[in-house]
Image (cartoon, rainbow, N blue to C red):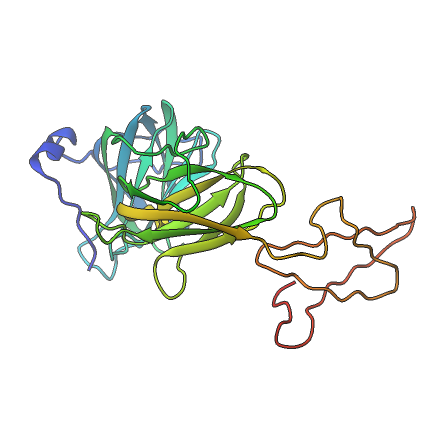
Length: 323
């Protein structure tokens, strides 16, 4: 069954009670749109096939916006499968949801880091589908959080110690600074906390560098919904461990733990200081010795020559799966 969004009396007052009239003119499917959404309900239609509707939404810093996109149809068979996406002012995707809470309808939460306009898109999962939809939007202050949600966080992860935290709301993420050094392998585990009042439903773990580039990620591990990853740094520095929920669809308590051990010995360096060398026309057999291992080789090249490099998996039970 398709889900219906229900509100209490306090929320209903915020949403002004009645949905806005359906748009008479089809909205553009890009940032040129002048159609606007506001708190409450707004009806629209996807037609003809392949139609997408973009709306502007004014957001204020420090507010969390809950946006639902529901199909509106007397017959479930004729209803569209709506897909909801948010773009920033530059047209870059910042949030997305297809199905929500066991239904084909869509819902997500968006935290505004600055005041301004964002773009909210309605489209059908099947581009051939047409039909009516309804946006429903509410806003509330972002709840206080025990860890920052970006690289400015002051929260730190210390090896060998459990951190009990919480994803305070759907879309929340907790960033922790972690100081790392070469020669060590870090095992990072993010587990739901069964002792929390509300355990986190499906933990999702990411590791990024100081520029925000993803170094590793883990969703499910060892047959469970908990997350686990290993990381062996090539240089000393600070990385960020990000605790969140899969698809930003859950909230609740988690336990984060980082353990470290001496990294396995590696015969070939993973940087320009390597002593490994390739010689033209001579095959070289070697191995990646642990998860995250990278081998660098020097090779002497001549200007004006074309070179072909080939990397194959080895033979036997320990052959590299995907070089």
